[in-house]
Image (cartoon, rainbow, N blue to C red; front, top):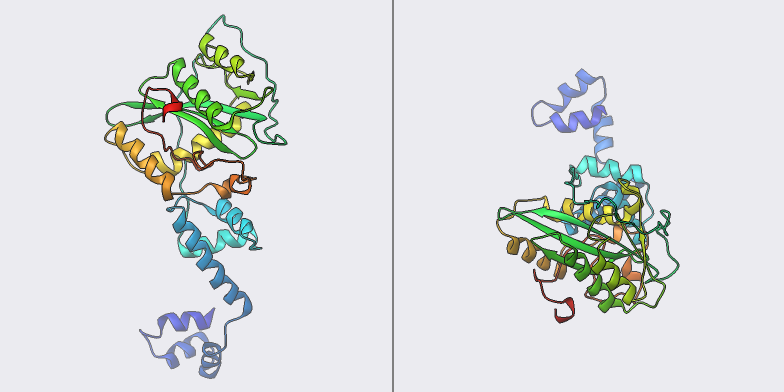
Length: 302
């Protein structure tokens, strides 16, 4: 510690004076200065370079948990505390999410589907369990609503829709896109909250026509739809809340640009979709970006 202080202050005071004040010898200081770096220091430098690269690739959104996960995914063995320490020393940090608004509006007196999932979001194969939800994104023009359908096996968004309203047609469009992308077999479970859009007649008819079983979580319990909650938290933290948006079209364009080369979600998904070749290029990762234009037409035509 004394030698580091001398190294930092030697431009302001003579080395001999600093050594005398701190009670160390000049020979000891110069021996320390020319001593080769320890293996740990060399490893820290290598890890810091990798951490900085990953942080840059995420456009400054990843904190230490996701950077640690990405390092592990790349085959780098390192502890979480070491990653956190190196990021702290380098002045790097992730994006902190904010509170969200309310988009789940229940319909009194309408029967809802049972909970077939019971918070078990780990299916054995793709197209066994889809989760869905709806959120709002603010622009200067007004709110833009986004509905998504996420495959729990790969944590990929397989269907989505954006509109200026949050009527039932929005979630139906997202479901139809997911069906068109994946062509699931009968027996697939579609899980959501108890919002009015998901208990609507048109949504139930669309799901049943495709052989999909409908499941709904408990009222007011976000943990019953944790995968979608995490999806939207990542979207807002990494994209929509990093700046303000003048128009709805500007926001959609930014999402489209991100889909071609923006942030990736491999670090936050236990089983990244890039490990599963069944996932199509048109689907979205767990760090979501939306590649479809703002539209009201059928998703099959996109």
